[in-house]
Image 1 (cartoon, helix red, strand yellow):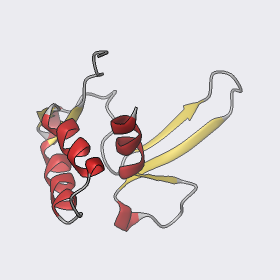
Image 2 (cartoon, one colour):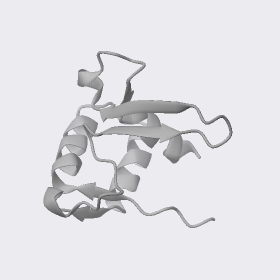
Image 3 (cartoon, helix red, strand yellow):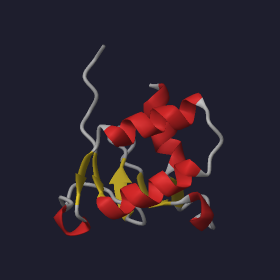
Amino acid sequence: MAQLPPITISTLDLARLEALLEKQPESDVVRRLEDELDRANVVPPTEVPDNIVTMNSTVTFTMADSNESFTKTLCYPRDMMVPKRKSRCWRPLARRCWA
């Protein structure tokens, strides 16, 4: 099995994500997300490196092949109001778990 990329998460984001997971019905996806969080490097919010995207952060990125830019905010499902500008936390985590 290939080595998984490192995960860094703040104590605040971890607590909020764990609270969300507790409310979800038991499933393979939930277990895999819990496994991903279990292996994360957890740091205080003030010690999150600048190159780490935390919850409620807005990031602009450019596609290398098309030079097209996108701006997204990583948010919790309850905060999803403008779908094209925000990315729910479940989507990238679920993608990572099924990869």
